[in-house]
Length: 127
Image (cartoon, rainbow, N blue to C red; front, top):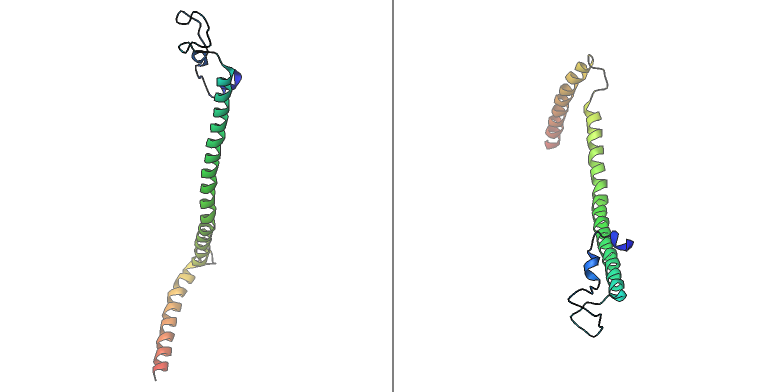
């Protein structure tokens, strides 16, 4: 009976035959009296083993499907975080904080200069 402990208490004592007042004589041809049969226990054990493997394989397939979905998106997420990291370092100045003011003044002047250069180039192309 230790096999049944794996699945919890199954009240196996109720499944075995009872030769009490309702069944005074264990008659194999008497349909009203339950009979103790090893075949019933064997079929029940096979059913429990089969259902265990079936449920386990279903659980395994669900987890493998979830893993595949995560694996497919992991590269995209990794590229997104890498882009954020590169942009963070691109936006920061290379100078320490007291001297970073120079960079912060240089960037708007560079932007204005490039805008003027684009206007001059557009004007020259139109002639």
